[in-house]
Amino acid sequence: MNISGSTFPRRSIAFALTALVAAFALSCALLDRPTPIAVPTATATPATASPPTMTPTVAAPTTTAQPTATTEPMASPAPTTATPSPAATTAPAATATAAAIERIRFASGSTYFDLVGRLAANEVRRYALGIAGGQYVELSVTPLEGDALSFGLVGADGTVVYPDGDPFFKGTVPTTQDYVLTITNRGGAVDFGLSMMIPVRITFDPGETMADLETTQAANSVRAYVIRALGGQVMTARATATQGRVILMVVGVDGTVLQSDGPQSPLFSSNLNTTQDYLILVRAAPGADARYKLEVSIPPLGGPTATPEPVTATRITFAAGATEHTVSGQVPAGSTVAYVLRALEGQLMEVTLWPASGIVMSIVGADGQVLMASGTGFYRGVLPKTQDYTVRLTSGAGSVTYNVTVMLPVRVTFASGATSAEATASLAPFTTGHYVIRALAGQTMTVEATTTQGQVILIVYGADGTVLQTDHSGSATFSGALPSTQDYLIDVRSVGSVTASVTLRFIIPPP
Image (cartoon, rainbow, N blue to C red; front, side):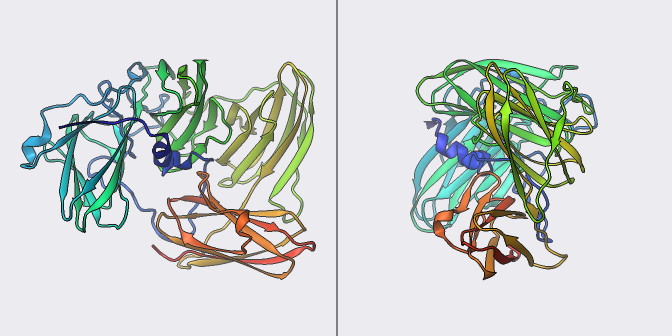
């Protein structure tokens, strides 16, 4: 039996941003973990360490050797195979099972597959699909009620990629062959959703540091690409549309969001903090199908170095106890203004530029490391080094009046063996203090804000843009299970007419 799949943008979002493009959001990269608990590996792949992403079989996958400090970014399938074909398969995996196996086929050009079905009580359902060796895969099975489902993934040759367990997997598969996904229902009859993502693997030709491809994509859809790169390298991706409109989201397979859909930008450029696979998600706007050229470049380690034309930079200094600072001004037509600030290695920095059109922002470290080569609207990332960072704003044909807000949240960590921490703050009326803490998927986080004077409320959201509590709650407390392993931002907003003296308590028990 054959099953055809189609693209579901909403679910694709949940996949990537680790729940990806989880919400697409959002936004972008973070730091340490607060608890003394090892970050759980969501993948149980025995022989493969790379994070997951399903790529419908494309060209022969280049099983990239673990990158060394080489001049070439470690990526995978040559961009000439940009359009994933649903699975060049080997002999059907049906030989391994007596029960009928349903074959999964991706729609032409799609990197996502979604299926909704129903399982009878205690039923076992099997699906087969061909996957090329070295491809990154994400699989998720979600019961629409209850929690009695599990699944396993096994190759036709008997290789166990993921033993029967929690119904979520991300990782690479070891060899090109059919793989059988077995879904087991240990409870009563239940409806379920099956989601898969197999991004197109991008690789560079020998000696090259850039690849490009041209393709067409349906309106209001998302297509996923994946490329491997080294920590410390700078990756630039640009989607130039000749028809329709597209934007880029970029996220590490570890869940670190480097660019969400917040900036609505077809350009991404940033340093990479970790050696791993990175997902590049191209979203086509509603209305018209998009035709675009996607260009990805990753220079060798040690480059590029920033050589911007000299501009006198104005130093940004935060007020005592403040976690954000806003500057305003006007850039004359065809000119550049610059600001410089000092920040610490491992800090999360967020820079928001308004308006997001008619002006381009770049961010460069004093050592020449490029955090953002040329972008608009928004940057969020973990800083690689303690040093000065320069934010440059360059206008186009007309002058632009702008506002730039730089935010450096306080990083909350727990003492060894502890599961809670406290912080104090004094917030003037209608100002906000920002905090960030890293936690694991499934942990329960509680934040309590008590005041001796004034009044505050809490806003809580993930670095990927997933909102856990908005200002509409009007609450000074938060408690909830965390959906993914990532940094979480806690905004403490003073809403009274007097300065608020606040004590914050953060509690995250072991999972």
